[in-house]
Image (cartoon, rainbow, N blue to C red; front, top):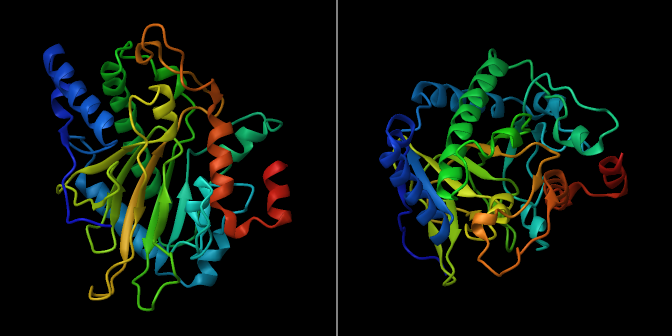
Length: 340
């Protein structure tokens, strides 16, 4: 069942970034409330220039407008799991939760940090810090994308101070766990739906995100983001102008001992009466260092109770879910590529 649109909390970050202790604590309480109750919120006062967001969105449109043959020149190799071009039908993200579903109705381009060095014998580093693949066109694409990633990395690092304050740990607690972060940007085009989808097919199947916090700037169109409420309803998300939609990922839920929710969400197929229209989404997935240990925070464990989760290495969780999501390409040769 899907209900009519319902708003999610909107949080202004400016008082935390520019205010005193009272303002910081007030913003942190808002974040804590949102993450406990629904796991989603929008942020304003984030400081990312609207002109940069607009130019990034246009560059994404220009790239996706290229012929398929040209886009396939930077097709993502299966062993480099978040880099390059993902064609329509490349994956079914519902498989990340073990749910069988048809391929998602989307195409995408992914990239991470540039010029990263790592131990070539470290398989998890090789998978999460692989070199980026850049197309020759459109002009200026690489520089625009790297500018956008830097702006989002800066924002996400500032927001970790809010997170730390909300979870009652030192404001700089997370800093050393993100000093080599593989956080990735994913540009997504959801093509206009002009034919009846397969049964159960969506633009993005129901899933939870793998990392810490996701930042989304997506077109507010029919066939957009929906989140699942614990009463069983799916609700549409209609973000405030100029905001990012944010949600908690699995690793942050584990860090907080499930005090904060990693909420199920999906991207719906537009209703039949809607005008066929592409939807563009710019997504920044904040992820800790590939070898960071995720251990439940003591401030989130009730006295006399044990932590709900054992310690886990970031890459163990991330790569396992990512490989499942790539089900559409997981023949024997691809599985071998993940292991090498």
